[in-house]
Length: 298
Image (tube, rainbow, N blue to C red; front, side, top):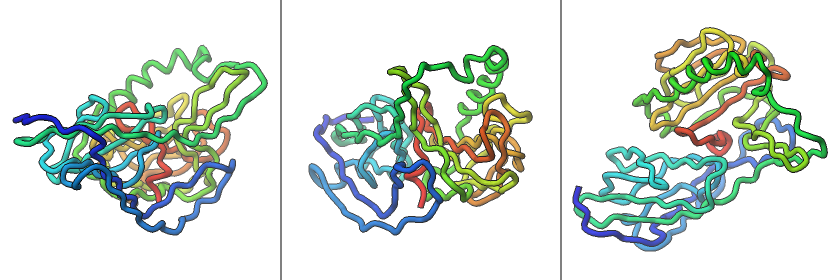
């Protein structure tokens, strides 16, 4: 790799594409498609060939397919190396608690490196302040603690599997239709002590309702037994380190190692594990970053 120098500055082209991001402002919401918004292109600092191209403004908890500057052979996000496809695409994913600025850098063969400081909008999370002491969580139960170590080993091993799926590039679809009963990022604060935030999207539906793959992928974990917290757990890797986890299923209709296509049935909604009622908990992660599935949906 030849480094002829470094080009610094914002170096980001924001292209706002049609889509919708439902703001979590109500406790329950029936799922419905929003009308597409008009595209509003905006350029920052120079020609697009020398810029990173983003389909929308960066925000905590958001994942998007971005385009590296022309000729990029390596991209880093906050110093972490991420894969880049032959056509310059890479996955930009920001944790729920990502900092307000992050540095993107592209190394280019035979050309100047491009470095951009990306402003990250704060997520609009549902924070509830409770005037009562914190009374612990599932992880504080003795029986839970005894069983949890082996379950976490199995989950972590599954998340280390890297598939070559291109599902990460697709427009995601709803895995099931229903009432939203839990929002990603929501959190309770007990007399100033923050509890754990909700790491996924809960979609309430009757027990036995089929759920499907939101995008192509490979099944990296189809739990052979119900886990203490997740119940019947399924994890699908969509490639590039992006994975979906589906919790509390009544049953799983796929097996570990199976390739699945977008819209293919994966199992049925249930209330296994620690659940207050039948629903599908959908968690989305990129590496260790926890993401909001909602902005990816139509």
